Image 1 (spheres, rainbow, N blue to C red):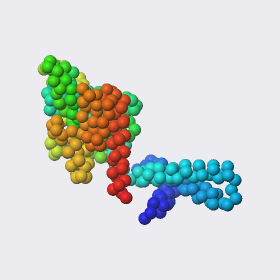
Image 2: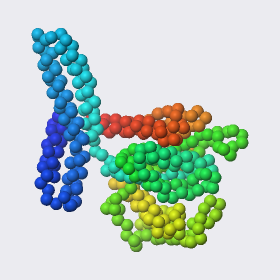
Image 3: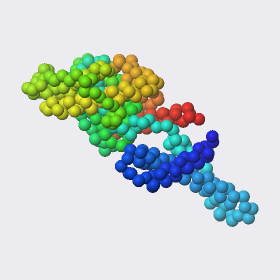
Image 4: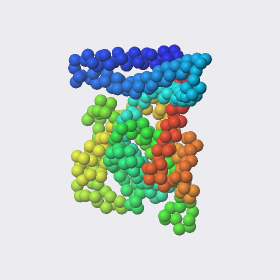
Length: 358
């Protein structure tokens, strides 16, 4: 099927959906919500198709105008200029439509659970994990997203053994999913008196947050333990057993939270992370290729497995998946220039999916 035939079918289906939506008697039913979502998802595609059809008609009209033998020279020059613009516009519109027609990751519109863990490198790895966590917090703020810390395991010197957060907003997973993997840092630690450059690593996992209907958790499959919250160096955060550890027995997934003074709030936060991990495991089972990709990306936290390197002496950030290097380390870690990396990753992913679809 050529592109024009495919686009005709899309427009026809869109019009059919519009008719069904207009005739629906029960706007509160799940079927109506499903129809509305499909209709809304197709709207931007149809808008681009209309622009493409208008441009195609302009091309036909301008070509016909230029074929007229007795054409005013000034009018001919204007038509030639406009014809050039239309010819440049057409492939751009076609590419945009092809991208919109590609199958979407069902989780792209989801909020996320972000997990950052110190890898190899001791205290320096913990400090770097904290730097990454703050980078995502600033990035979320710049995009107007909500950033809620769920759990922080402090090293006592300003670093994190592990840290998790819930990030909510429009298209959060679609952008941040490329951050899953091992991030490597090369710099002189503050504790290094000899000025030697050390290499450390931290792992990042970006998990789409499930909806209630995505993950069913039976209470009998949970073991919930409570214990006394502890701070850095063994200092008691409080004197009650408010910390919560939840074990999902079928999968063996364990989540703990001790940030809140309330056991109820700690349990709610831990359940939120647990649901995201179970949902991610479910997604991986449904897509073995994705599971392998995530295993390769996230790895074990070893320095040799990395998707990106942050080199402080040279002030550069290098993403090894697309051979991209930016000499904007401070701005990337500040969240300001992270979009430059993500846009390049998204473009590379789109190009690969387009090539596969053709």
